[in-house]
Length: 404
Ligand code: PLP
Image (spheres, rainbow, N blue to C red):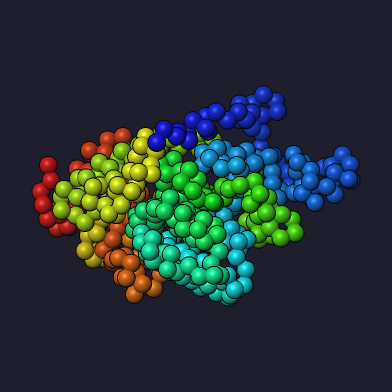
């Protein structure tokens, strides 16, 4: 694909009102109006370019939103205080009592918990499906279904969604296709493949500094206006607003995302290949052995590769814990949840980020106890990293084959 979203970010031209190369940070929660009539019009949603109150929008939040919309190729975007603060209003905006959602069963634990435990209180029911099987997805759609929900690359199992195929189903049944693209920014551009709404937890690769949580919803002007509507907009009324100071800092980090993604992908591809050769059960979309390797290739923007996430199954939770503690001791990364940091981060999702999913369901979806999820860092010398990881694995008798 020739589409190069990072170029869109580079083409944006925002600077401060005093000529600063960065836009000034809006340091106000409320805004003055020159006439009372304009204030009234703004409440009615009719005064373009006027700011009202910072829970609604701020210049800094709009700058970040526009940059992310340019990256995702959507008309506009709305930033939020966290990834969950982006996801939950979208679902609640599109569904009311009696409505139904079809969702991938392998999604971030928090989203899963929201759909499984929280939305039923509002009589919004979700059917969880194997998203890689379009037949089962279609079979789960009923007359009350409003949303098809998935992650382009799922957390933590790295299943890949066929976004074009899902988009066809969504169109056929008049549903909205919502794609969480947190694991594959730049690599996959869901809007080009037919997604209606694209969500990110900015907390991860996009901000890349592990210093904040943040989220974004990218979509049409009409939908984003609906989310922000003062009378019935879920983003406006639920109040998960990003602070302007933070929006400005995320915007600055976003400008290096293209360089970082290339390095994350390069390092993850190197390690995945080495781990697999060593006989470890390794899952990485860039490996030929990944069931959706071809599908990923058919969708991706090649320059950004297959992403920075991989999983390795070391057999048991005890072994996983021992290995993670040893790798941390040897300064290979941190035993921490989250992803997209300059250091490698590792965790055992069964007992952490996916612990909201009951054990039986974890088993059913292939989430085993010994699974370690790696977010591979920006190491400049990944060969050396592998040598030290290999030594850790040998010390714990995890490696079965000798590796070149
Ligand atoms: N989506 C995915 C794929 C995630 O991994 C996460 C968090 O881990 C979220 C959404 C939620 O984002 P946040 O923690 O910023 O609320």
